[in-house]
Length: 253
Ligand code: G
Ligand code: G
Ligand code: MN
Ligand code: NA
Image 1 (cartoon, rainbow, N blue to C red):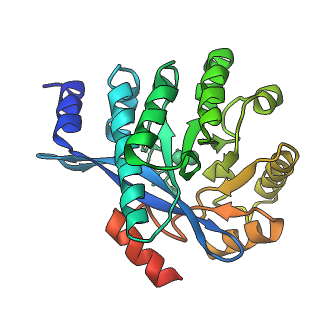
Image 2: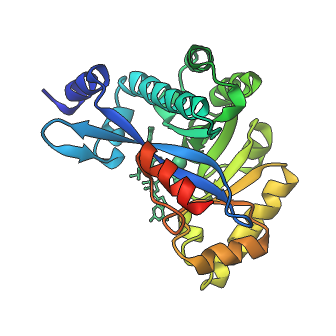
């Protein structure tokens, strides 16, 4: 059985699991959401990371059922947390192949209904690269998602090639600043200048901003001083299994 065949089994047998990394407010430290990151609990090879299978899945039709499976797990988890008294918005990563599918908005709507989750509790994280490969087609799909009330985030912002015109025409809610500009922001004036420019752009376009890859307290302090509202990174928390995230939340607040 090749990797793709094994992935079909993994989806059917429930071998995919999600870990969650908090998104926090830079000023208060309050957690405002959690990004779901897929792992594969492989029966022989142990816990596989997305880099071990997502690139191959993206080149195959399996990315469609895989995306559905991840969405289902994330909304089910959100619902379980909500039923336990914890209202935590969730974010899911969407690969280009998952997005270039005119039926995708309908499947997202069906999943929200199935789990009885409000659309604004879900953020879809999309990379710049998937937007520019066919901006017209992707814009039509993004508009339908946004009309549902789902939040749309550009992941790894600053590393792709999206023009200002695309940014203005896409119905986005959030920019996530790529970690390469964030990790050493307290040491590198050039990084700070780029983050400053992204913050100003986001303000002008009325988008919220998350800085990713915050690994040190010094970086978090600089981001807060610059007015970057939200951050994510190993300094706050690594991606954690759901129960560990809840324990972290209790220990943090
Ligand atoms: O989890 P990690 O810590 O290793 O993630 C590595 C990469 O895999 C990131 O670029 C992330 O966006 C991507 N990724 C993680 N989970 C998913 C997923 O459920 N779907 C897709 N398409 N990409 C994912
Ligand atoms: O492409 P995306 O932003 O979805 O990727 C998320 C990936 O980034 C995951 O692999 C996650 O483990 C990783 N990540 C999260 N926080 C940090 C961090 O502070 N530093 C580094 N190097 N990677 C991080
Ligand atoms: Mn992401
Ligand atoms: Na990212």
